[in-house]
Structure formats: C-alpha cells, structure tokens
Amino acid sequence: MNDSYSSRSMRWAGFAFALGATMIWSGNFIVARGLNEVIQPATLALLRWMVACLALLPLAGMATWKEIRVIRGNIGYLMSTAFLGVTVFNTLIYVAAHSSTALNLSLIATSTPIFIIIFARIFLGEPITMVRIGGLMLAVSGVLLLVTRADLAILLNLSFALGDIWMVLAAMIFGGYSILIRMKPPQISQSAFLMSTFLLGLVMLLPWSVLEISTHGFPELTIDIVVSVLYIGLGASLVAFFLWNRAIAIVGPSTAGLIYYTLPLFSGLGAFLILGEPVGWVHALSGLMIFGGIITATRR
Image: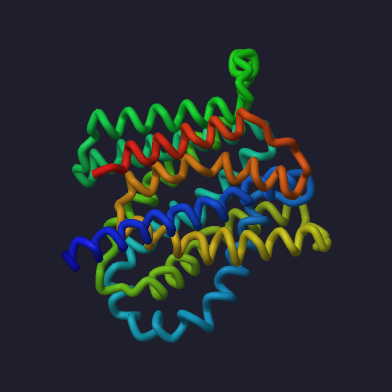
C-alpha cells in the first residue's frame, strides 16, 4: 500500500517537473523571436550559458570537484550530452528564429515528443502502444488547433524557410538529449552532472561564438537584453534543465516528451499576460485536447 502510494507520488512529481520545465521553456521562444534582430544566435547562447554556469558554480562546484574522477571516467558520455543539450540545441533555436516565423517555430517544436518516442523505442526499447499513439494524435490535434486558430487556410498557406530546417534539427537533437539523460551514470550526482555538462557545452560553444563576434561584433547590452539573458540563463537553463532531467529520471523520456506538448499553451498564456493578445474558445478547446491527449497517452 505504502509502496503503491509512494510510486504514485513520485510519478506525479515527475509530471510536475516536466510541466515546470516546459512552462519555463515557453518563454525561451519569445526571447528568441524578440532578440533575433539585435543579437546573434551563438552570442546569445554564450551569454546564456555563462550566466547559468556562474549561478550554478557556488551550488555545485564543490560536489563536481569531489566527483572529478567519476566525471573523467564518463567524459565521453558527458561531452556528448553537453554538445547536444547545451552547445547545439538552443543555439539552433536562436538560428531558426532569424529566418522562421513564430507559427512555424511553434508547429515544428511539437515534433520533439515524436522524436523522443521514436528514439526511446529504438535505444531504450520502450513500447509504443495504440493508447499512446491515440493520446499523441489528440495532443497534436490540439496544438494544430491552437497555432492555426481553427483556420485551415493558415495551415494550407504555410511557407517554409531555412530556419524551419534548423528547427527540425533542433527538435531531433533535443530528442537525442532526452534519451541520453535516461542513460546518466547513477554515480554522478544531479548537481555535478549539470555543472559538468554546462561547462563542457560552454567550452564547445566558444569557437562558434568567437567567430560570430569577430564577424558581427559584440552587441550593446541594453536593459532588455540583460533581462532576457538573465531569464534564459537562470530560468530556461539552470532551473528548467534540472526539472527536465529529474522528470526523465522519474517517468522516462517518452512520458516527459508528451508533456512538452503544453509548450504552445504556455506561450499563448505568456503572450496574453505580457503582450495583451486575446484568448478565446480556440485556446480553451485546444488546451482540453492537449491535456486530454497527455492523460490518455500516459495512463498505465
């Protein structure tokens, strides 16, 4: 009885962690679109991960040093995880925002859970049941309803740019990162794992950002840029990655990936609260469809 209650509590905690990470990440797309004309992608990513590393260092520096032998023994795994999740994934989102529309970014982002489920099947052997497929399709339909505002003409008249290809690649990379998180060696603590991957990812990002700065120059740090960098450095990096990694450890990458479908809902809520964009029946119906699909697909 107690074991069953504890298992249910942990599962709900995993859902909450994945939901919290997705909620924070929804603001990352707003920042990417808002700063695409004033700061280059790799430069923005460099500032983001510098803030994240500096904030995490007092909290995880000692634990990382104590586990340095374990980290050295798993350096190949950590470098692969850091390259996908830190160096490349979010930088590609910022690259995509330079030549893609907000609608296309939102649509393509919803392919991430599909890649996670496929990769989890290939590399982890997780089953793909008909119930999970049904829930997945219901959630996808809710997302399509939300981003097209129930207007089929919007979907039919979509045009695609180079940024859309970058966004598809980013979605695939995040799927791969989520699978690698499931393979984390148990002897590496969560704090040491975050510190080592953040630092390794930052180091691998340096050549890209240095080349970019030498070509385009360093941006003028206005109040808007500073606030945005602090948000993505502390929130979308430090807090969100911690929550996402914990969620995957508890409920697995496929289930956490399904909860990622709530991202457009939170983006819409942010647009309503910050930009005053209207909310109507389409938002309510799509929200019910997305949450209904998640509940259906994650039922045991």
